[in-house]
Each structure stands twice: as C-alpha cells, then as structure tokens.
Figure 1 (cartoon, rainbow, N blue to C red):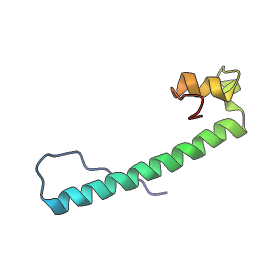
Figure 2 (figure 1 turned 135 degrees about the vertical axis):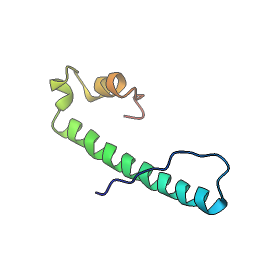
Figure 3 (figure 1 turned 90 degrees about the vertical axis):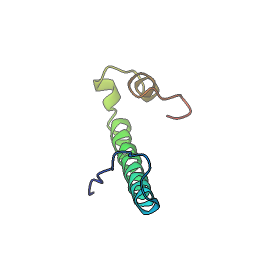
Length: 72
C-alpha cells in the first residue's frame, strides 16, 4: 500500500489546487481508515489486548483508542 502525502492547508488557493488537495486528503483518510481496521482486526484475532494488559477488546478500545462501546 503506497502512502499518500497530504498537503498542508493553505488559505486562499486557486480552485484547482484546493480540489486536488482535498481529493488527496480524502484518499489518505480512506487509506488510514482501511489500515486502522486491519490493525484492529489483528488486535482482536490474536487477542493482543490481553498482552497489553486489558481484559477485553472493549476495555482496550475504550482505554487505548477512546472508543465508545458502539464504535468498537
């Protein structure tokens, strides 16, 4: 998976530049979300939350990721 470099926000750019930067940021956001899901799956499937000192995946997600129970 290729990393996407996101442009820093700069106010008052031409429309084409704003559009291109926004598209790049959205692609990076989608890539990050996909990667996070895969990492979380690894934590769950291998029960790595136990090794990290948590009794459940829900406790791990609440403490380490600040997730609500429904988000987990």
